[in-house]
Length: 396
Image: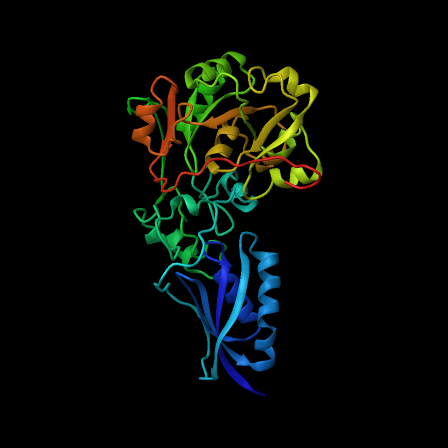
């Protein structure tokens, strides 16, 4: 039995997506020893073991990443060096290393199923927590200042993890292992509802109060991942008209957000490819043919057009708003139910101006447009607006 020690360089979307714990699991399954680390070029790993097993490593890694790390993408696995075995006895994940940046920052990803269920399961420690995430979902690009992608390089640096979050973060078998935005109500960012002068609006729950204002026809600015949205009830023609007037957006169509794909299908006639896009981690606005129900329900949203832009709730804050609109159900099965609740969600900026990303900026630039601002204390580092896609001849 011939033993070797090999060094590999792996590039692609391999930071902040659960890649290192996935590689850790592969190494343990193959009984290989060594280490894996992040650096500015991507991921490096040293593997020691039987040559025949080492020869299977890349195939096993690619298969496991494909099955278990949905946000990761391997572009290359390069064998950098081969040396005699040193007799290492364990495989470990080591600290990130510095260097000249060549790797990519992973895009933000919509809240995954597991996190959503935790959020809406009574008794879970993340019950209705607006910043729930794991290595399969949540912010990346919009909170990153520099790479390697580690918490000190993000806008989460100022939030020290509590002991429970730290335990998840340090456990390679946990899906929150090295999830850089990992947080909970004890240690993480918090929501607040303010007016456009920056004063707190007195309420027991900022999300419930914001949802109530929206149902009353008010315009609420909502801080999301890459910027603020202006949200109004899509069924309230007067509210939508008032939004157009205040934003000086007279004619361009507005996008509508729903709870899930089943709800979106009430308003758009989607084919299978469009549904796949609607449910993808990017959660883009998907252009679809209007249903008859849509034509009768949404006035001033996309008048005189046969299509409407629809997206589904893709952040915990969005999900919390729809949860409040649904009456705060205590069973997470509401996440899958078709609902008529629908919100116009348009970028929060006067027409022709850059997207608003800071709370102080929102108070200044949205004064006279928004009636209230649902904001939080996690900084948006990079602006990022919603993508819009159309399927033509079977391709987006």
